[in-house]
Length: 117
Image (tube, rainbow, N blue to C red; front, side, top):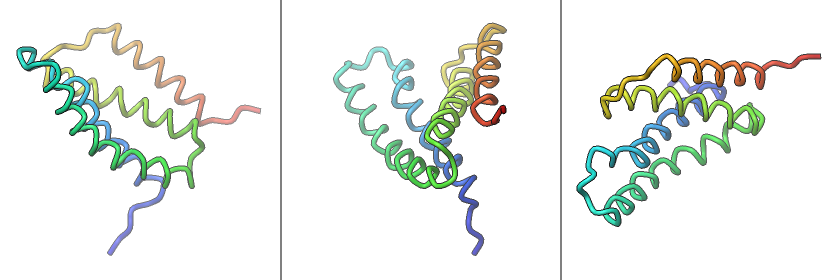
């Protein structure tokens, strides 16, 4: 049975956790008629599964990546997941300024992962 590389496993887990968290934070926007206390409880229930993925992803990922790198991976994944979620689920288009902002964040991620001497 093949095992997943320790450099890839945390990324896959963080990606999956972000799908849960994006639905927890923004999925309710399609159900604005739902009472806020219900939305909060449902969001907490969804976020519970996000934590079951994110916490071990960061624990195991810390064997390969620094904390700053893990946080950077998390943020880039968050933007990718949110962009897809926004377009596919919320039906909100992304504009050029969103793409430019994401590109600038990606440039920051590049700097986190490269050592300059």
